[in-house]
Image (cartoon, rainbow, N blue to C red; front, top):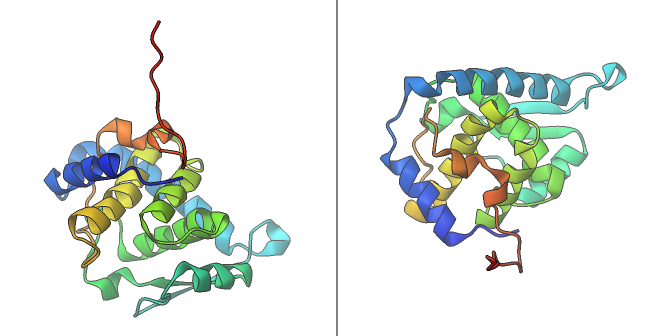
Length: 192
């Protein structure tokens, strides 16, 4: 799977043009929050009660140089997350603790679940994998949080800074898993 550069640029442009917070996104973000907290409870829950038993640590420095180290930690039921409070980039809807928990579940159920890194293709694959764990309403917020931020960071900011956190809904087409380009495949339109 590959990040289609035209789609990525359109996502980044929509994200940059959006306000920091749009009240019309509140219902999607409320669903996103609820569903993320359930995922987090499963991630850290005790194994004897059906959880995964992963110990999450929120740390003050970016803990992983690459995804390989993070994936290895998850395999050993450990995961470190860079603290939202330390990043100086607060979320306009989520608390710092909620945002940290989201980062943990996205790293575990997105990146580590498929063994993909933090480049554009890895972010796209992690979004697609993780999006299957959310309702269609919450997926709209997830898309802003993952596809919106990563495309903006990688394509608009050229990897030099993290994108400003926003609580908005990008156009619904960007939350559609069918908008992802599979490696080696092209979209063809058949004539009738």
